[in-house]
Length: 67
Image 1 (tube, rainbow, N blue to C red):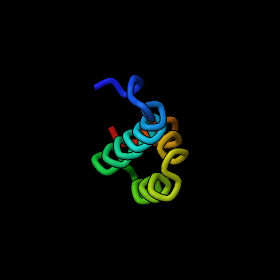
Image 2: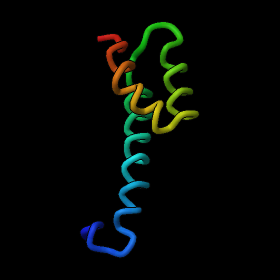
Image 3: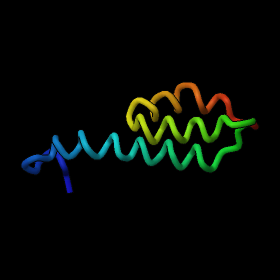
């Protein structure tokens, strides 16, 4: 099913993309190992600032993981 061809399809993309980004960031953060309290801080940032928090996590937080 092509979302762009449907009436309201573009609006669906503006909802679907942030939700997928938020879920992906939250799952990745919960599965990863961080030092100290970094994990709980990132989870709270992602939950309370869904779009901005997810973007910040992917730009900054993923570099703070323990290898």
